Image 1: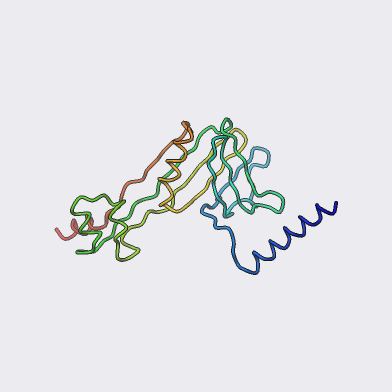
Image 2 (image 1 turned 30 degrees about the vertical axis):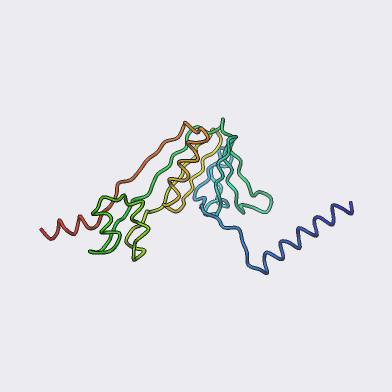
Length: 181
């Protein structure tokens, strides 16, 4: 019993230390909708910051959902479908910017975007993830740049019941030229 008490007090000290230092775990996803067949919808879990971990046995959604629950486990054989929706790619460069020049030379945007001058020159809107199981459904959103990494990791671990949807590019330079004609 004494050993248990010491580990609990040690864990409590670590929590206090993390509060004082201000270091928090960084979440990359946001759970925007959670529907459970038993409860239909869980308002407490919606709009919660979380992470999505892809494992060979299934998926784990990790976050601060309630005091007792911090993980939503999803076994691979329970998953009916996973839908990834890539956000729109918005390109708004100006004449003679490095990204504009590289794009005109035929360099792909995934490479030329690293030489943008302003953050507004290249953006990808949010990526949406919809996981459907027998008992529940999850909807998550994340930064648009995480799409390719998530897609690769799901394919690599054999999630074949995956639907991939991409939205078209929006190149504002082409629209401006059309208006000038």
